[in-house]
Structure formats: structure tokens, C-alpha cells
Amino acid sequence: MRATIVGVLLAAGQSRRFGSNKLLHRLDDGLPMVVASARHLRAVLPQAVAVVDDTGGEVATLLAQEGLRVVANPRAGEGMGTSIACGVAASADAAGWVIALGDMPYVPDSVIGAVVSSLQAGSDIIAPVYRQRRGHPVGFAARHAQALMELRGDEGARGFIAAHRDSLDLVEVVEPGVVLDIDR
Image (cartoon, rainbow, N blue to C red; front, side):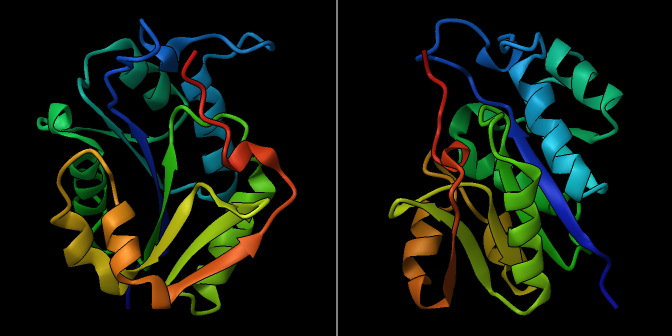
């Protein structure tokens, strides 16, 4: 029998558009962005893996302090797809994965919980939708493990989801945080 659903927090980005490591940017409440994202994910999924570019860096230290298992993606510079692959490989016995982004701190626990519930109810791929825009996090059933571990490039799982659109379930949400990407 497979284990539980695992959260995968992608935190290996290069922050090229932001000008500095945006994951460390402090929000209005003083928390670094990546810590807020991690806390929302862990509130629903205590078993969570954070994928970073350097396990000795400040982001990795903060995420380890938050209770996430931290793994380094030696190929982080090749794009988000490699980070998804790394996180799934680090938890390959999971019943499924909820892939969350470290730079999306306004995704509420309730949305993460809805994604998890949909996976537990049998959804194959599940994503929230806010005002007709697909957002994050995205959940994947265990049957997609091999394909997720083979992802490459900077588009993450976008191409995989498009190729499997018939398997994609969407959950309507009222929280704009699922589409709010902080780049400035």
C-alpha cells in the first residue's frame, strides 16, 4: 500500500525577474515569502518536501526549520520541470503529490485541502481555478510518478497537464491567491 499524499514545495528558482531572491522577500507580516508558502502547505500536508538549489543556503535552512524535508536539485538551472522531478523522486512511494510554489504565499490552507480531498476522492490531476484562470497548487495521482520524474525544462508540468487535459479536474475557488505570482 502506498503512503500518504505528499506536498512538494518548489523553492529552487533563480528569481531572475525579481532582482534578488524573492523567496526571502518579507511579506507585510514580516515572514519570508517561502516560509508563508511552506506553512500553508504543511498545515494540510505534514509530509512535505522542499526542493531547493542549495541545501546549505538560507532558503533551505528556513524550510528545514519549518519541518520540511529539504532536497537539492542539482539541475535547478535547467528549469522547474527538474525540480518537480526531484521532489517526486524524493517521495516516490507517495499516494500522490500536491505541487506548490514557494513564491505563492497567498494560497490558503482551504485550497490546498480541496486539492488533497479531490485526490483522495479519485481525481487524477486536480487544480484550482479562480475566475477562469487555472492556478496552484496542482495535485497528481501516484500513477503519474514516472512521467513527473521525467519532466524537464522551465514550463514545469504545463505540457504534461495539457497532454492529459481529459484527466484534469478543476475546483472553483474564490481565493485570488491561487493565481497571484509575486515577481516585483
